[in-house]
Image (cartoon, rainbow, N blue to C red; front, side, top):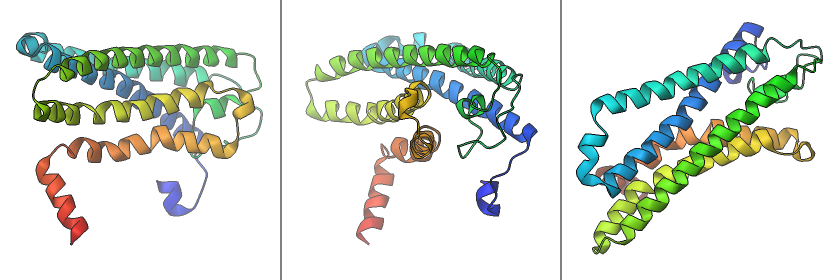
Length: 226
């Protein structure tokens, strides 16, 4: 944001390291938190009478702590491994922020394969989260479709659908960005994919989740219609 305001594309080595650390930590934590949210919706809709017992306060705190702890561990591993590599291919990144795949292109050591391995492991974990999300929502939709009231089905769908929409955009673009074949690599495509998974989901999250609020819907409609 500062670079945009000041019309500069420079960042210090320490600044780049810090940016990578926090970016990886927040992305990893969001993966796990989105997965936890899917599990929470599954329990609320498929096992409503057991919700208070299964999703007790202690359980929620433990899951949140695990999500942030795992994100922190991911960030430490990726940051330490990436910046331990000697960089000799210049100092210009073909991206609007310090992204690990772009940093690896500057490496002149075969040790970058370690970081590629870490990226693959991260992608596998993300895929596992995505499969868990899909299975959770398959069970949720099966339960919702058995609700006899059309109003009840509509209300439940409107509560659940925003979450998988955000998750799909976030996970699919992130995985494709890091695992796409080299033949599909281009500057414009890399930047577009990075915007899709790093900028758009956080920007639209408040709008998507708050659109379940009827008062907000009414206010937006009045604003649009004058």
